[in-house]
Structure formats: structure tokens, C-alpha cells
Amino acid sequence: MPRYFVDLADLAEARGVDARKFSVGIGQEKMGVPPPDEDVVTMGASAAREALEQVDQDKIDTLMFATESGIDQSKAAAIYVHHLLGLPRNCKSFEIKQACCGSTAALQMALALVAQKPDRKVLIVASDVARYGLNSSGEPTQGAGAVALVISAQPRVMTLDPEWGAYTEDVMDFWRPNYMDEAVVDGKFSIKVYLKALTESWAQYARESGRTFADHDRFCYHLPFTRMGEKAHQQLAKLAGVTEPDMSLLAPGLHYNRIIGNSYTASLYIGLISMLENTAADLSGQRVGLFSYGSGCMAAYFSGVVSAGYRHALRMDRMQTQFETRQALTVAEYETFYQHALPRDGQRYKTPHHTTGPFRLSGMESHKRLYESTVTAAAEPTNIQVAAAG
Ligand code: HMG
Image (cartoon, rainbow, N blue to C red; front, side, top):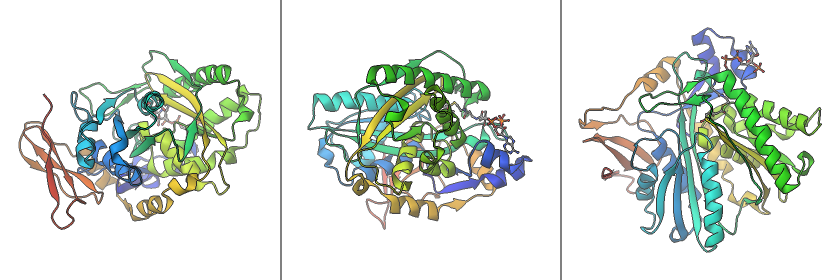
């Protein structure tokens, strides 16, 4: 997650809104804000670096980068991450897009690849910056973050079930034209479509798996804001004839998103990590229902069983350190970051140094983004120039 955040109580005051609308109505407390030298590549590479710590990199057969905050129309963000992490040359690297559901599409493809070659692994990076207009109704649902998933035939965290439900419909609930930096959204309509897609994808999943609501011990949902997850869970329970679902089962999975904000492709998986890290009970062997929604729209319902020993793969102490060392921005400082723009004329430009992560966007030259690793040589950061596509 980025090093900076805005407290939504401060945003509410600045926008003249009752703070409870954000904390209770949409269920958000803070939103992550990327500084000018942080983008989807730096956040994604940082997440992947941690995920690969105990993994033999030579086994990584494919790197899929899911994002809807792409930095280039041609060149995949995956190629930059491949370079920054020094992954093997034989590793295929490409980008996938379908709003917040791109990461889940990547996951399903990764399962097929690993089934084909069980000795290989697939790295999925999901990284996004959720950005709406200043002073718009979407503004408090902004955020940013990345997740990296290693898909293997010997899963340490969760074994996914083979049954999936999917739903696709051509709708304009949320989109971002190429010429815009902020998403355009029909907010209330997007909530309706999200819930419809949940009903439809769940129906196919339930039909194919023969499982009922009661066959799942926990539930995780795509979380544009945490109240949406609660609404989704209430709806799913209602479909199953459960009038008063145990909402306390949902709470541990909402915790991180409540203080990070929407991270689009990463959101569902940040929710899953939040649930695994913040549930005191041992979840080994428990079945988790997962709902992924991407505006536009495509959705997927699927499930997985938590592996015995999953706690060894968690990084709770590091998450806590990241939360504790984050810095609050005033609304004016956030607006300055928000308005920062990279040059579009090819001039040489050095980005101000803000992030403390292992990678940063150090600048631009001749329309090429320049990334810097701050960990390869601590005293003297290496400037990694990455050639343009073409
Ligand atoms: P809004 O019009 O500002 O808010 O938009 P509202 O008037 O609907 O109020 C929100 C809630 O706060 C309501 O509760 C109010 O009653 C309550 P609800 O009726 O929904 O239960 N409220 C209060 N509660 C306590 N005290 C108060 C108070 N005042 C009001 N004083 C909206 C809200 C979410 C629409 C807006 O923020 C938005 O457009 N966000 C962006 C779109 C979005 O997140 N959509 C979610 C579904 S689509 C999705 O998940 C995909 C996405 O992640 C993108 C992708 O796939 O790539 C977005």
C-alpha cells in the first residue's frame, strides 16, 4: 500500500459532509494515496518481491499483471515488474484487464496453466489506484494497493475448488475513457449491477458445485467500500433463506480495506488476507466463498479451502509495520499529490522522492518511465532504465 493516507474524517470536514456518512454509510475510515513516485508498477513489484521471498524464482513460468490503472497502452506493466525483480527470461509476462475482476480472470487462467505443468508456478500481480474526481461522490471510495499471488500445485494458503460461476453483461456503471485520469461512475446503478452479478454468478456456482450457503464457513467480497461487502453478504444470505446471517464472520475480512480504500483488482485479495490475518480462530480446512466483481461488467463466484499451516505464509507483522509507519496527509497535501502530473512532452523529469518502498518511479525521459530500485544497492540506488515498447 502507499505510504500516505487521508483520514476520511478530515475529508468529510473539508467537503462539508457528515463524517458518519463515510464511516458508517460507506464503511470507510482512511484512503491510501500514492505519492508521485509510486504507481501500479512500484506497488506491484513491492508486493511480488515479498510474495516470492520463499519461492524458487526459476519455477515462475508466467507473470500476469492485472490492472485498470495501466501506464501504457502497449507495453504491459508486467514487463517492468519482470525486470525489477530479475525474473527468468523464459517467464511469459503480460497484462490483463477487466476492471476489478482482471485479477480473478488471471487466477482462473493460472489454475489451468499449473494443472498443465504442475512443476511450474504462476505469479499474479494485481495493482491499482482508485481515482475519482475531487469533491465527487466517488472521492471517499478512492484508495490504492497491490497484491501478489503465487499459484502452485502445492498451495500454502488456499486450495481453490474447481467450480466457478460467472456473469457478463454490457453495462455502463463505471468506466474510464482513454483520455481521462479519473473513472466515470453511475454510483447507485453500479451497486445494483454488483448485486445482480452476485446473484447470477452465485446461482451458476451453486448449481455446478451443489454447495449451499451453509457449506461455506467464511465469505469474502470485492470491496469498493466495506459497506458494499455487508450489503452483498446480506443479499446472499437472503437468497439462501437466512434472515439474520452472522455478520461477525465478515468483519475480519473488512478491516484492511476499511483503512486502505478501494484497490480495484487487489481489493478482494486484500480482503482475503485481512480475513486470514485478523481471525483469531484457526481457519485450516474451512471453506471460503469468494465474489469478484469488475464493472462493465464481469463477475465470478468461486471458493477455496484454507490450507493447514496457512499461518506460516502470512506476513502480519509486516502489514502492521506498514500501517503503523504510514503518514497522514492533510486534505490540501492530498490534493497536491492528486494534481501532480507527469510531463507529456518527452522532457527529462525527476520525480520528487516520497515513497520508502523498495521501488520508485524516479522520473521520465523521452516518454519512457524510469524506475529505480532502492534495495539493490542501498547506499547508491540503481537507476533502471527500461526501454520503450515498439
Ligand atoms: P453517495 O450518493 O455520495 O452516497 O454515493 P449516498 O447518498 O448513497 O450514501 C451512501 C450511504 O451512506 C447510504 O447508505 C446513506 O444512507 C448513508 P445506504 O442507503 O446505501 O445503506 N448515509 C449516512 N449514514 C450515516 N450517517 C450519515 C449518512 N449520510 C448518508 N450522516 C456511492 C455513494 C458509493 C454511490 C459513491 O461513493 C460512488 O459512486 N462510489 C464509486 C462507485 C462504487 O464504489 N460502486 C460500488 C459497486 S461497483 C464496484 O464495486 C466496481 C468498482 O470497484 C470498479 C471496478 O470494478 O473497476 C467501483
